[in-house]
Amino acid sequence: MEYKITELIGKKNFFLLAGPCVIEGEEMAMRIAEHMVQLTNKMEIPYVFKGSYRKANRSRIDSFTGIGDEKALRILEKVRNTFDIPVVTDIHSPEEAMMAAAYVDILQIPAFLCRQTDLLVAAAKTGKIVNVKKGQFLSADAMQFVAQKIVDTGNTQVMLTERGTTFGYQDLIVDYRGIPTMQRTGFPVILDVTHSLQQPNQTTGVTGGVPEQIETIAKAGIAVGADGLFMETHENPSIAKSDGANMLQLNLMEGLLRKLIRVREAIQE
Image (tube, rainbow, N blue to C red; front, side):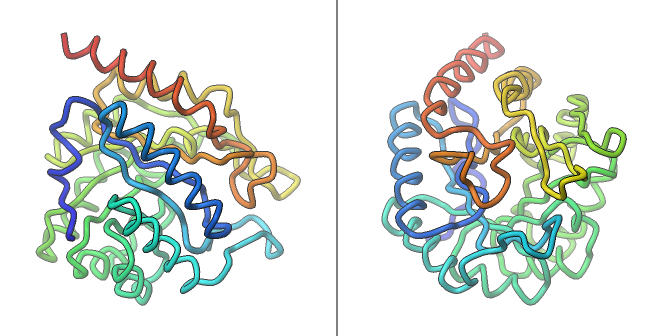
């Protein structure tokens, strides 16, 4: 089945992209997916399972990058088929676009690569939904030109994601004005809650984060009208192989989503 953006937007609730930062193994991915599907079905939240099949942007050469591309992509495919849900993963080079498109429904362009024309065009040509994360160095207004590259290729299935702006050397800040600004393109806008809370470039060579602010950032995003949210989650973030410092613990997801639904209901009154 080819998923379309219309299956995610225009519903009672915001839509949600959530899952582990990186696929660490099949059992872990299936457990997280099952938990999230049960929650989102109960709450009527359109859901997309998120998992990177490989991490290309790491602070150190000895950082975990993945279990192998094909193995991880097949796990994503199994999640997709088992639970009948769309799946999103990152790609990092034009050559990866067609390969990943055989297994997933949404191709995600990492923030640092959002201006790479050949990568955007390759993703667009697969016909899949393309979700582009706004670079930490880029204004919200500039994302109209990023989106246009995809549209000019003939693919109008575009989503844009806010994930914070570089603030000094080791922090990010979310400018919530960017959400309505990017929505003026006519494409849905997602707030990447957990990556917005990263503290990059730490002297340890491991990215830090402030997960205690996840609820604050997520509530604010819904309050200003974000169409969707992106959140990385793990059963035990302290042992996660990537981005554990800013992920939401899985058993906290239900309580947070219930609060976010109430915020969404309030702004619709």
